[in-house]
Image 1: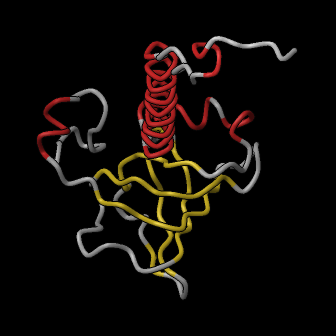
Image 2 (image 1 turned 180 degrees about the horizontal axis):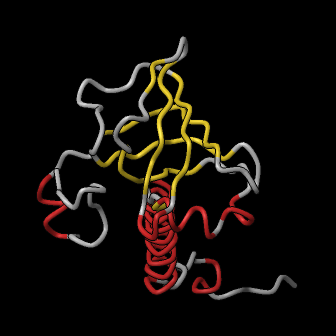
Amino acid sequence: MAESTPLDALTPVDPPSSPSRSSRRSIAVIAVLVIVVVVLLSQGLLTSLNYFETVHQALSQRASLGTKVIRLEGVVEPGTISRTNSGAAFTLTGSHASHVYVTAQGSPPQLFQANIPVVVVGHFVSSTSLDFLGTQIMVKHSSSYIAAHPNRVKAPNGTSR
């Protein structure tokens, strides 16, 4: 004899809806995207910051800086600028009577002259050298920066430009 089964047992049943599973998945995807965006922004901001070392700071850290590329900030000493075949050579002065001899490649900016603050991108010849090889000279001509940092940048004669 064949067994009879109730019709209920053969009727398909809808699976229980799981809104919590799909909402958890959406929240996880959004959280991962937020984390990725925050990491990318923070890395981009950290690598785009451009710090510079003053002549005095660079000389006091010369051993640890070695020949690493840095931005060196100081005032162009009067009477030391000479044009070379590849650019210019001059002496940068800083606080505490510190001096660095710079040989820069490429044409100096049009505003480049003695007694003005500049930033030179380059590196020391060695960890004990006072010679700095520059690849770029940037003239600092913002009077608002000098007014905001009066003890940071001054010409040897005491004037600010």
